[in-house]
Each structure stands twice: as C-alpha cells, then as structure tokens.
Image 1 (cartoon, rainbow, N blue to C red):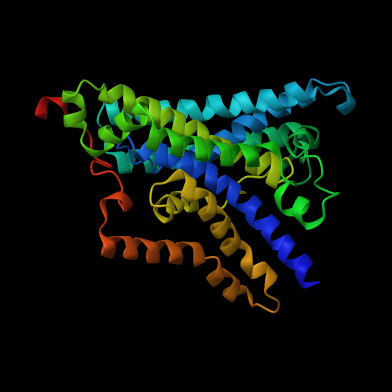
Image 2: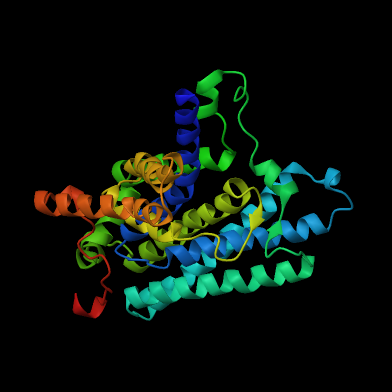
Length: 332
C-alpha cells in the first residue's frame, strides 16, 4: 500500500514537473542572453492553445476517429504550438531588443495578452463544439501524445516510474541536457553567455548582440511553449479549459532561480517542484486552507534558495550580470 502510494506520487510529481521543466529551460536560454522574459506564463498559454487549435481542426476534418494518422495527429499541434510560441518570442524581442522597451513591463504585458488570447480562442472552440461543459476534449490526438514506452506495464515499479510517460516528457529532459551542454561546452554557448554578462564587451569582440538575443529568446519561447502543449495533451488528457494552467508559468520562472540558471539542474528541480505542488493530495485529513498553504511550498523553497545563493555570492550561481537591461550600442 505504501509502496504503491510512493510510486503514484513519483509519477504525478514527474508529470506535474514536466511543464515547469519546459518553461524553465526556455527561460534559462532567454535569460542567458540578458533578456528577462516574464511573459513565459503567457507564452506557455499561447503554445497550449495553438496546439489545441491545430488538433481541433484536424480532428474535425476526420470522418471517424479511426481515420486519424498518428504522424499528423502529433505534428500538426506540435508545429502550431511552436509557431504560436515563436511569434510570442519574436514580439517580445521586437519590443525589448529593437525598440528597447522595458523588459519587465513587456513580459507582464505578454503574460496578460497570452492568457487573454488563450481564453478567447478557447472559449470560441467551446462554442463551436456546443458542449455543455466549458472545455474542449481532444481525446484522439491526446492518445497519440500519451503513448508510453514499451515495458511500462510489464517491468513493475521501474516501468511505472521511468517508462510510463509520453514522448514530450522525455523530450523535455533531452532538451534540458542539450541546452546545458550548449551553454557550457560550445562556442555558441560561450558567445551567448558573454552577451548576457556584458553585451558591450561581446559586441566589441565581434559577436552580434541583437541576433544572439533574438535567437536565444525565440528558441527559449518555443521550448517554453511545449510546456503548454504537454499540459493539455498529456497531463490534462487532451482537455482544454480556460484558466486551467493555474500558476504553472510562474512556477517555471521560480524554477529558474532554484536551478541557479542551469538547465540540467532544472530536471531535478522540476520533479521536486512537482512533488511539492501536489504533496497535499497525499496527506489525509487536510483542511482546505491548509492545502493552499502547501501549494506555497515551491515558492518558499525558491526564496530559501535565493537567500542561500545571495549569501554565498558565487558568480557561477548568480544570474547574468546584464539581465533585464537593454543594450544601447551608442553607449559602448
């Protein structure tokens, strides 16, 4: 009984943490270029609804669910998600890099816009379906996203804990490891970190600062957008409901600090955050107000880590020096 509860808790923690891992990995890539993108919650929302729109029209083009093609059922919402989140990242860069708008204000505006965008089109799809409940169910598409690895049900607890997730969960881990390798071991990663630390020096060394910021932010936004797609298609079993994301986008930003700007650390941090976020469900007899206090745990842990990092004051554990600051080449 206890073993089964632990296994279930670990599974749920991983599934809860995957959207946070996508969001934090994308934000780390963005912040390494010196851009502080507080629009990640909105970008994840747009990524999710963009994938839902693609899946909705694909499913409605089928005469029967049995006619669904697995490749198209995955690629259409995936490409729609990447396109939607890419455009959000491009808009952020245009405002903050080209027009040099305040990054904090721009990010918050993108979050507000993204949530409104998602709710508008989500509500429109709900009206098109004529459903009695305020949600859109995309079961056919979701089933392709939720295919687990072979052996998930035949290898006992190992399969349940490590093999029972959809392909996007494993993609999140692979992308985080690849980003960590890129930042630490490649020339492009060195250039990106140089731009984030001191764009004037990087510019003087011949690095195109604006291009680096655009690329890092747009790619980071696309990675973050996948978190929204995973939440809808895998975690929520293909059901879209307005305001269903909750505060996961903000948790992803908090995870960046917890992971001390290291994508590989974000893998473990996402599982910890996912576990802390749902631990109240596994504690019997909790009152409602006590449950809400437990939901604060990820943020409390982030604050503790931030205090600890500040006390240690080690350069490698701090964010980029020029984070959140616009670069004016004329002042070089």
